[in-house]
Image 1 (cartoon, rainbow, N blue to C red):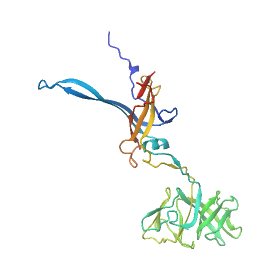
Image 2 (cartoon, rainbow, N blue to C red; image 1 turned 60 degrees about the vertical axis):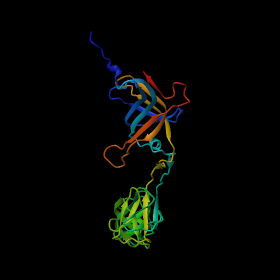
Image 3 (cartoon, rainbow, N blue to C red; image 1 turned 60 degrees about the horizontal axis):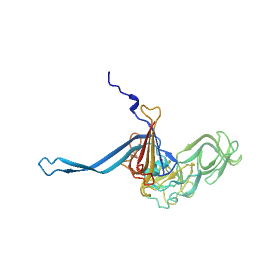
Image 4 (cartoon, rainbow, N blue to C red; image 1 turned 180 degrees about the horizontal axis):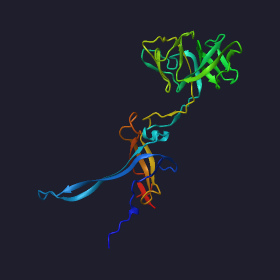
Length: 326
């Protein structure tokens, strides 16, 4: 009779889910997609060797230490995952409401004087302006508020030149070929083109001389950094105007917390090959282990090592972890 094997007892290409919560708690965060999850149990011993002959054979071996270690890679950069692995004490909220800056000094947000070829922080994310191109009738100037006669959209002129105006504090949506007026029927532009530009309007204090992106300054519109170019003409008294979008944002202060301890639970997927299992680690000390790639190819993964600690709140003999098979 041939020897029998049972493939149902073999976990192959294991999949599952992992959860983390407060030690002793009953509610947990889903850790999301993991690159891997491994558990290692290491037993360290000391050996007593005989002194009766040159072979010095081992006559006693005693266990001195046991170490349980979890290693896993977090792919999902959730606030809770970052707080846990980067040793943050809290998740703080600092949402950016949509608004505008109008004819403010360029370095006002950072309260700094501009220096050649160095960036300053505007303090806002996702900055932009609106440009209307078309025929101007009458007189329009920086400082005027204009209104679309059909759309009823409004905006403030940050700069005006022949054939176009640049607006901030825009509310509503302008329409092509409508009269966008300061004084209806007298001072207006009839736009044939309407553009949202990843730019800011920088002018002299009078609003009559426009500084140009690429010649006078460079800009990171996503994160609101502006740099005065040494070959350009920007001076400290120049003013800046732009709109900025609403942005939901939060932050942690990394390494502000002491050691981070979590209760970790791994459950295998019920459709995975092999027996169903649930591993419950009562108390795990979480450590970021190795490099976290901020720039590089492929997914950024937080490589985590967790040391399994003794949870003295558990019953005797049950202080470390539990493995259930279903």
